[in-house]
Length: 156
Image (tube, rainbow, N blue to C red; front, side, top):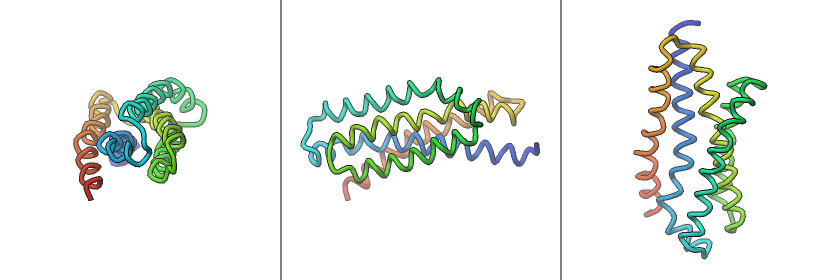
């Protein structure tokens, strides 16, 4: 495999991790808007967000098994596509039960990404620590940019 192709794989995996993290992080800054829209308390929204993170954690193990069975690329694309679809569901949720289910589903599909992406990167890089370090940088970058962007959008 060429070094250039490996760099593209790394960039795309990092972008995918960034995207799945952004989808999870943009919800918190708009909690006040959600409480008004759904007529629920901060605690109720917090419960939905906690459920999202639990679902994210739970899908870490099955993601590796799915990657072994169906291939890393398929699972990564499912994670990114599922994240996009569930994000759209959340933005159009007409009621809180659907929003709650959507947050759980968002966590579950986003959780599919990381394990299989690191397996894929291990195949293309001898310096796997460096590659995983770059890949993981997508998360903190999302943590920096997503809340700011969500807050700006929410105020408009």
